[in-house]
Picture 1 (cartoon, rainbow, N blue to C red):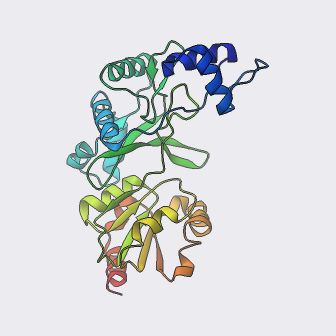
Picture 2 (cartoon, rainbow, N blue to C red):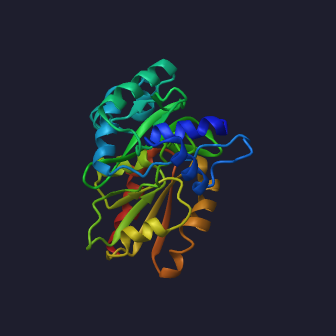
Length: 292
């Protein structure tokens, strides 16, 4: 939170305009109060194009390292060292000075306005928040990093995966609900979907099946958009047993509610561990659905 008197000058500086114009714009945005009560600065940046996001995030991740505990965790899921390196997984720095230095170095090379996750502090230096977890890049079909997911060491509000975002921060940018897809063509008739990008990466790197991965979406629109121009009729949703009760309710009521009336053949496959995906039972189920 920042005080309103300070917010006009701050807004003017980050926008490169005078205080009079800043005052007028803030009134139009309805985020400035004339009674000088505390207000919160909302994101003011449009999302940068994917090429710039990819360049910033690659340089950003190259400044960080993957801690041993997170590398061991990824290996228990079945990821090989080569896959871990190619996936650009990195531990979120806990040290505040480290985060400030990284933000400062990036800001000298790029305009970070429009890059989700980064924001300015009250001294106008760029930074990003601390989280206990590691970054998971979310690639698009062309290999660009669309955005970063954060896999938390401990779930927060029943979510273990959150977006690297800077909404409600000074000069911050909100993340979108990006989706990762693999090997989906017009002729595809089956698809595996999952609400976990780590599992999505395993599917892509091993069996290379048609796949959609997402997190924290509230309806099926994003899925329908990706499969509407294909021959897909069979959907296999992969869900982990430890979160089965909560996730199944979420899937049925939000994700599949609109898919079921459209006559898709929907199957839900439970797994205890990510490596269960590669067991014969699962592969047989998927093969039968694919041939249906």
